[in-house]
Image (cartoon, rainbow, N blue to C red):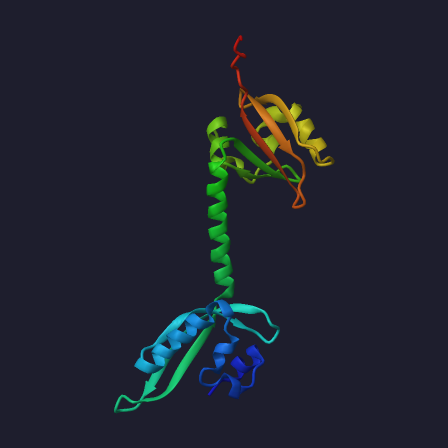
Length: 212
């Protein structure tokens, strides 16, 4: 037996979903794993549970948390199987987004230069660990705020002019300037298709060229 909601979601006929037929709606990346687990459940009578992607009538896949248990008679013989499929696609997407965010944060912190990313309104979106160290500022005090609110000394600086030009141009700009009372070499990467501008900076070298 397959309920109406399951038939409506998959678009498959009820008879096609009976037995092992429902596995044809499972994403190919999970199908063989799920097929083997289902074989074990049928052979041993153990519960079947797992997370898998199931194709809808539109052809799109959504993640479901599936649990199937055996219904038994008084002699413990299996009469039928009863299964539930709970849509967890939004939860899985949120978990993946958090994982990607954490991975990106680790990647940005591994960059050996300070990195500030601002959006088109110059709101700070990213302030990596090196930037926090160089500026002696906590990233939580910086992100989400206007760049010039956090660093008012930048309002009439070369960086300010470069940001203004960067929103209209395509060339990477390099120059020296001051930030948090220290001298840095800046590289401004102009506005990208997603509307953000990246600012890489590191302490200005004070090492004099060696004499030959």
